Image (cartoon, rainbow, N blue to C red; front, side, top):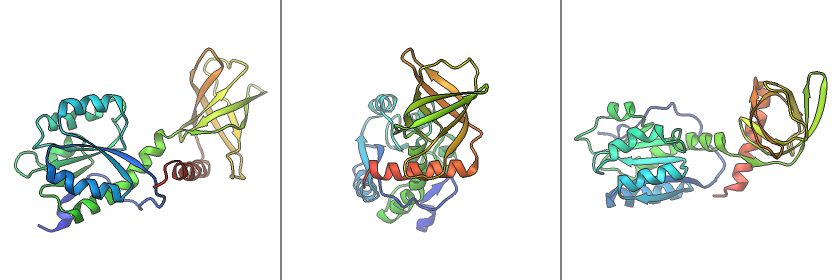
Amino acid sequence: MGDRYLCHYALPLVGIYNHRMTLESLLLSADSNVESVLRPTLEKLAIEVEICREARSGSEILLSEKFDAVIVDCDDLRGGLALLEGLRATPSNKSSVSFAILNGKKTTTQQAFGMGANFVLQKPISALNASRCFNAALNFMVRERRRYFRQPLKTLVSIFYANKELKASSTNVSEGGIALILREELPKGATPLLKFMLPDVNVPFEVEAEVAWADSKGHVGFRFLNVSQSAQQALEKWLDAQMASSFPG
C-alpha cells in the first residue's frame, strides 16, 4: 500500500502556514515505536509534544489543558478509542485537531472519522508518512490557535450607539471579539458600532458588536457581529503576525 493511503484525512487540504511558531500536542500512546517516529516529526514542525501512556490520566490532562493537536493510539492503548470518542465533549479540546492511530485490525478508518478524528494514521507509521500527515494538518492547527488566541492590545476604542459616542480602552483582541474597560454601562441588548485602529494597520477597524460578558470592575467583552470580509482578513493577518512573534519556532 502506497504512502498516500497511510494517512487519511477528513478535512480538505489548504496552503501550509508560512510563519513558524510553537504549537502544542498531546500523544496518547504506550507504543515506543509510535513515539520514536512521531516525536522528531512533530519537533521538526515546531510542535511540542507531551506524551501520556495511560488513557485515564490522558482524560484528566485533556480536561485541564489546551492542545492544538491530540493524537490517540486508538487500538493499542486501553481506553484509547473511548478517549477519542469523548474528545469533542471536553471544554478545552473539543475543537482541537485530532489524529487517530489504528493498527488495521480493530477500528476502521470510517469508524475513526465517525468518532471525531480529523486525520487517521495506520501502523506501522513511517517517518515519511508521519511528516506528510502533520504537514497536511499544520494549517488547521494554526487556524484553531488563532481562533482562541488573545493578543494584548491597549488602544483607544470609540463606541457608537443611540446617537452617543463613548471612549474606552482595550485590553486584548481576538479573531472574534475585543475586551474593553468601560466607565459607563451599556443598555442591555445594545449592539454598538466599535471603531479602533490596530497597530501598524492604517485602515480603521469598524464592526458591530454585542456584549458577551461583563464584570463589576468595568471590564466588558464584546463579540464581533457582521464583520466585513476585508476587515476580517485584516484582523486575521494582524493576529497571524502577532502569533508568529509570540510563539517563535
